Amino acid sequence: MEQVADFFRDSLVQGVFAAVGALGVLAAILLFPVQWLRRRRREPTATKPEQQRFAVPVTGAERGAVIVAQPGSTVNVYLDGLPQAKAQVRDPFEEGRRLQEAGQHEAAIAEFEKAFAAADTDSQRCALHGLIANSLFDLGRLREAEGHYRQALAAAEKAEDSEAQAAALGNLGIVYRERGQLDAARDRHRAALALHEHMGNRAGEARQLGNLGNVYLERGDLDKAEEHYSRVLQILKDVPDPVTEAKAVGNLGLVYADRGDLDKAEDHHKKALAIDAQTGNKLGQAEDLGNLGLVYFYRRQPGDLDKAEDHHKKALAIDVEIGNKLGEARDLGNLGLVYACKGDLDKAEEHLKKALDMLHQMDNRTGQAQVVSNLALLHAQKGNAAGALPYLREARRIFAELGASPDVEKIDGLIQELESPSPPKPKPKRGPKKP
Image (cartoon, rainbow, N blue to C red; front, side, top):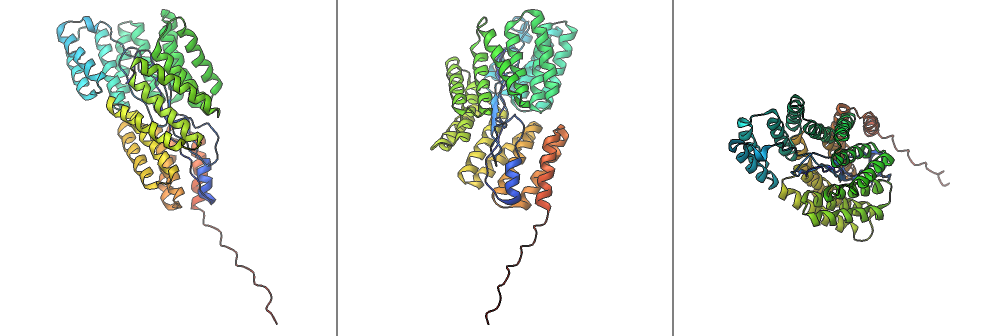
């Protein structure tokens, strides 16, 4: 769930586990792409939690985000003339919006479908496809959401509605980024940005610049990500938007975290949280709390793991309340990593498996690969190489499907290490017999 002209934040989950031998190599190497917290911070023996970044939809409702740190992104909400439509369209639309904002997405979809059946114009149908897709996105049903965004785009092109086209393109970009299809995400956000520039829509430009920043952040190009987020804040000096401002500030916090400046990251996430609290943006608050939890997870000063647990629990409570399934999965995964670091491995496995079940239901392939990898590390921490191998093979399969060749190569090396028989221990040499 997100708000108009917002950026969507994703989360990544990576944990730090200590191990020895081949298992130690496993824990040290499995650092995955940026989507669940920022994984680019280089720590030995660590897989990181998720973060949340920017992703932007066009107009109104809120939406949720994925596992780990969460960059702020928001699906665009395009309403066209629905508030002024005839009663058969307007009434179920208004009820659907009320239910959507309350996090009751299944009921909201049913109302939007009633409105769709009575819609008169391509623009109305475009808007309703987008609203249905936004609720599906919040439910984590990415494949279905993509289908409706595509239909929204087709209807917008038929109606020659540039604003609606930009909204649909931006939302498709968010879906592709969630799936780890970064080239496709970049292309959609660039196309949406070009339309906003042509229309002179500065607020829309800011949102798409933020979404492009998220793509660069996920690629590990921190300089480009920072440049795009800074451009967002520059535009907002002319067209104030506190929701978008909070996402840009929070996403800059992710950049600083990736660079290892955790104190500066903490300051930015706290500032973003204050803005979101002032505007009542619950989705943003959940993302900010989750990202603060990740800062404490990585910093590890006395009491920081307890702080991390507390912040992830607060984020989880909000995500459950607003029906943000993607955010809920991230929060569960990040809590699992905290428990692993506290030594409660059974509780860690329980939370990671809950996150994985949700991600399977959402068809979120990138998140699945990350959590499966963390489960492998968990078994490695338990000294259970045989238990780690099935998870590594599953992670390899998913990364291969996503075209993530570097991750596939790393996992191939780890699997080979774990499958290689240990060399026999040399027998101790005996000294000469005493006469």
